[in-house]
Image (cartoon, helix red, strand yellow):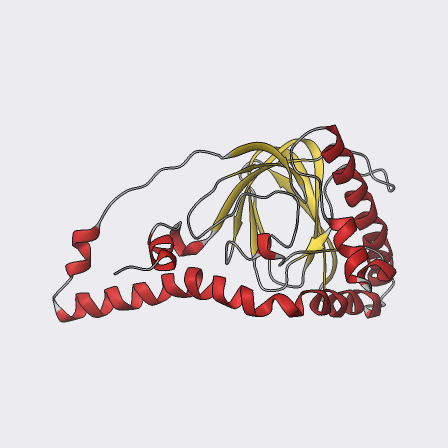
Length: 256
């Protein structure tokens, strides 16, 4: 008997990655730049495949501050701990590929809010959570969230450019403290998703080597359509897919 988790893993996208489409926000921030909410992921690498328009992604990492121009056909990706901020340059449209899909929706994304917000889990949750839906109240809340993340981000960037990595490292530590209690739940998502996918490949290789590839009799195909268009994501308006074992519908609450 195949469990529900195993069934979901069988129907996941290759490598159990997450998939969504983003149109970068066009709201101007305090520094005059239009774009999304700076944040990092704790255990997930994220990739941008640019499908239209132009813009950039700003990153903070031990490498320092980087400004990476984006145009149609560009590919950029960021490993865990890298703060990234999507910048709108005109019609920027991106397909996002996310490692360990399901984990970002379960809280593996922390905004660069100011230290006093990060230090208070309840205050952080209130600032990070959006009302459900895609109406004007949700848009206003998403813009406030973006502005608060930019406020903290600009302080981190200024220090890093000046050669002081202390605030950036302190932000990483604060982010890790915020998510620590969620790790057991993340581990279960990972086991049912990315790990199960990798282990299934190992079993298939064993079957091929033994000359008994019975698993090929289970071959099939799937298709999906977006379950919601124009949701308010971290970096822009987000088209989402409800795929078994992968990306969950995003309702604005980073702990869901």
